[in-house]
Image (cartoon, rainbow, N blue to C red):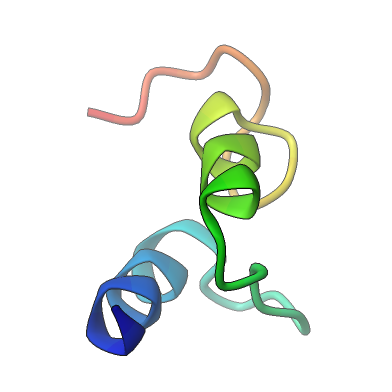
Length: 45
């Protein structure tokens, strides 16, 4: 799981001065946008 979250952080919170929480709720927040480098409803394909 540590490797999973490191990879997510390297792509979705790159360059920010914080890391996501190591849980599914935090991961869900980053997926929906607004809590990382992507805006809400932005296509991240």
